[in-house]
Image (cartoon, rainbow, N blue to C red):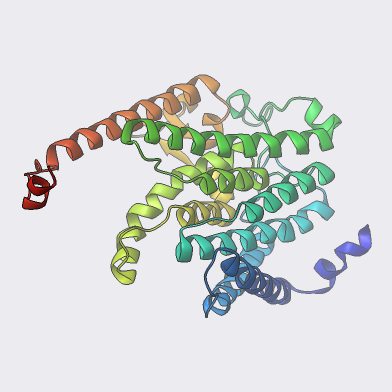
Amino acid sequence: MHFLLWPFEQFSPAVLAALFGSIVGLATMWLVRHDLPACGVSAGRWPAGFGVLGAILGGALTWSMLVLHCQQTPEVVPTEFWRAWRVPYHLCLLTLLLSITATDLKTYYILDRTSLVGLAIGLGLATLSGDLQLAHVWVDWNQEIPQLRGPYLPDWLGQHPHLHGLAWSSAGAACGAAITGLVREVSARILAIPALGAGDVWLMAMIGSFLGWQATLVTFLFAPLLALSIGMVLRLATNRAAIPYGPYLAGGAVCVLFGWRWIWMAEYRLVAGDVSDPRQIFAVRRFFGDPVTMGIVLGGAVVLFVVLLTGLRIYRSWSVPPRTPSSTDVSSR
């Protein structure tokens, strides 16, 4: 399959960025043109607009992956072939995210078929290649000893790469579906209306199949930050009563695609001054290798979410003024 590396060997990153960006733009335009009518609305100028956006983002992601190595981490070392073909793999995800964003923004609806096709592509190519992961299904950086040994990786990951591909992609899909499904179920029980739609659950499952469970959790964390930072601007600009949440989930995934290298290797001092004890430094990669800490943090987040929703329900019940009988009510009796 070495001949499939020919484009990456013959063309510069700038040419590849222009080429792949154009392909993403055309593919996005085609998908939006077909998906919007399937949601019951005319496509209008949306395919052209999202096609341009796809070309820009596709070219930028190609450049970032080939030149800035934005997804490179120390413990994930793919073969030359799959390092190159990780680019179109993630450009496929980007194209699907743009199409889903278009339908959700215009119709508040995400086509299940788009997410399911993406889920099949993500899971299938991950299994076939065995070498497309952003992060291994399990890696423990807490066992690293600088200059002596690296992080702990289970032996079977290298012995059975295709099984590992199936494992990390399936774990990502399950994680994405589970966390959005949990939020949907809890909000439906407390507020009597789900905070997320069923389409969001399938969307996160698709994202997880491409990114793995660690990056999927980061994606879900980024989504509300994007909603808070740009949601009000969009609401004022579009004069809409509500903005769907799917585009923020898609935006979180795009942030991960562009910034995974720096997200995964990020470290933050917990105390001031010179720090020699690694326990006094919070490292994202070590957090994902500590199941106890993850359980405490995620459990605390769920409890906080329930408390906030309960408070919102109480506030709504107090803020609704009592209804006084109208003349129509009296006459109807």
